[in-house]
Length: 299
Length: 267
Image (cartoon, rainbow over all chains, first blue to last red):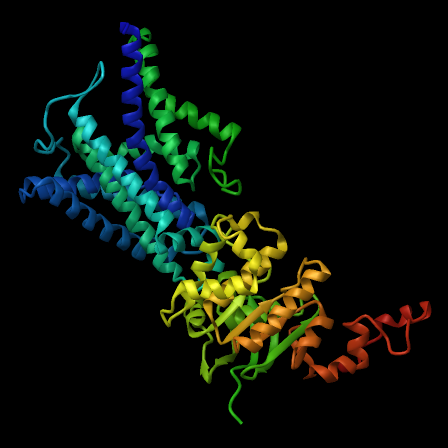
């Protein structure tokens, strides 16, 4: 195989890996948006907190990784539920823009709290996975990308299947379709809201751990949340399938730009900009995204 | 005599804190009966149903006076999902099918209103017995059904919920005359066979008066006339204003001028 082809494949594979992680983060946005029509700009901070929860369990309490992950999930579920109950529910019926501003405020508060509790230093998880890189034919994938990618995929599948095939998932989709009708069918839609927030926080926690394994943990980890926003817009704010496809598309584009264009740019980086170029193009051509519902409000 | 299943007492409803839609409305539905609620657009029929089923606050409406009693206990101010689980189920105007859910999932969602823990399979069989067409379409998305099929699905969901009182809002809306007859036949069957009492809101007064035991006529948020449906069918004004016919055959062109004369019950 020629060197050029291997280079291309390598870029595609890391694009898919990045995309899987984007997709997982995007799902955190989608789950909350579907149920409550709120765009949660604190999604990145939920990731960051989830990553710290797992880190604390592993380093301070020396728990094994699986236990730490479960602990982080539980703590995040509680945090999501509390956020919905204490912050979002009192705002029910307020204008969308006010609610969105509140999530931005929440993001700042979470980041500040994390700095107080864990300081601004960079941390990393103790070694979790075997160090040997994974060979895919002629390609080599670093183990700290490969295993987190598998975790991301598993989480995406779990949430997607849960939505599709469980009774609670059906109730959540019904609520997303028509809140008033769902309420009248005997569904406690307040429970659906609270469940959606805790599910989104749990999804974000897994994403946070995954990102933390790959790149380390700090209160700045949440920045990737905003970077994922183009994925959500491309896929459609209320579509889980869209999040998946949008993630992979942007992940691949980003890596191709990084591999082929950036070396020519003398220090500048197209890779960093690609998601936002896609964001602008999507909003111009198809504001509701690839799979989003047409009525979805434009931002 | 046992108390009625549903009693609405002197109900007053205000939207957005300013617009009064119901102005002291009272009605009752006896156990086992079909009761019709008639009236022109904007009379307050749908508002009445939403006040009963608890959905009013979702549209910024509020019960400011009066009470709604279901099986002798007040349900005014109760949350909609609790009212549904109590056995009072509303089929909303416009059918409100979950478009992105399959027919079967739509029916499954209605099982949230059940509290007896009975088997979903049994209720599905019952629905498919009344509406064989839905069985053929069970895996299709609700949004792709025709208007008639959506109405069948909306009533099917009510069958799954298995209420003791069913509120039906305009079940004939937008249906062909043939389909309309079919739906009314099934509504009667549900009332008799499933022992479900029904409060029926309808524009099609002829149909509604044909299948109901008692009827109320609503204007401007108040009941202006009520009585056994049999008697209302014979009432001259009801015939003129709601059934579109006049005693003594076709009215002449001259009578059209008098169309706007005050209705007797308003004087």
